[in-house]
Image 1 (tube, rainbow, N blue to C red):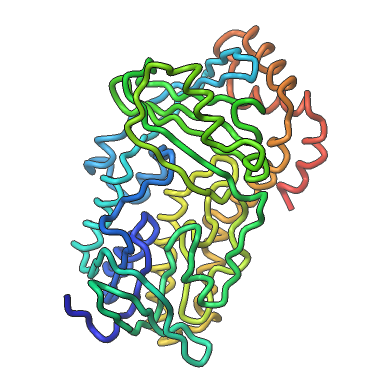
Image 2 (cartoon, rainbow, N blue to C red):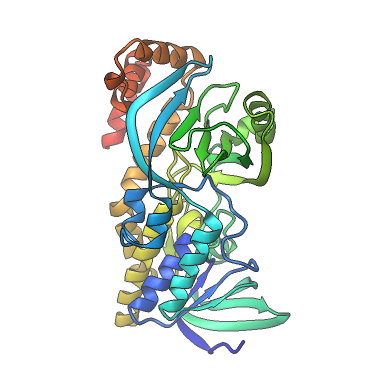
Length: 393
């Protein structure tokens, strides 16, 4: 493969955020190179794969194959620590994606928009001159390359090396990292139109366990727990205990594991010649750990800011920090509130969860709503009321 000596933008990482950033920039007339370390876009998968349809519709027409293939209405069921089941009067329109297919489609769309997409390109460093990121160094098919660019997008995941190389502190707080593991299981009894969420210290301390259906007798079954708890008992052991109890005859056809940052967005997500997107910038939802749509939103914003910077021929942090501001306005404020809520509710004990479930089960189905749950939590956990002002600061 022959590379040009310089591009307007080089994107490192072809996950949802990187692919959207690359495509959006190319559609704005920028010359873009997208580098992916793995041999294939979409692997390895590191998430539960569930997203809200409203988020997808920000990036796809409702007639797009992605939306048509995965769009579905799901009932929601909570399971308390003592096993009580709470069917909610809440229906969520969502999609349980096949990330391998989904990410590959985003990469294909970027390519069709004019992006030069390269897999098996291992980025080994940055070109830095006068405190500006000026390009990247990478190895492709055994050959070393050094390519210049006006802007670099670091979309290389939670372990982002590119961000660190640029001088941005990307180190997360230990308590903001969730140890996550998921099995895709087949030959199990699940309802195809219902998402199940299990809570409790014995099931998933400080987190939750999910069962997301993926078709006939198949589902993603996974959980996330705080890193502090995983020292005592590994996340995979919690999951194995649950599977042995609830799906003893099922087959595990795929295993996914990794760390997920459930903290706040990094204080700084841009610098001279660089912007961080997605997990690299810690842009996940602190409560759910979801990051697909957030990464895509960030990718779109970064492309718009890159276009302005190139028009001004100014790639300094002073210009690129507009990305920080636009992200904060678009999603960062909400993520901050999610982080506060997470820090409060993750310590609610089993007894309170059991009592809330029992009380709501005594109510008519139409009154079993998410608002009712939150109200009950306020009543049973008064400390939360004292913390609420933080949400509006």
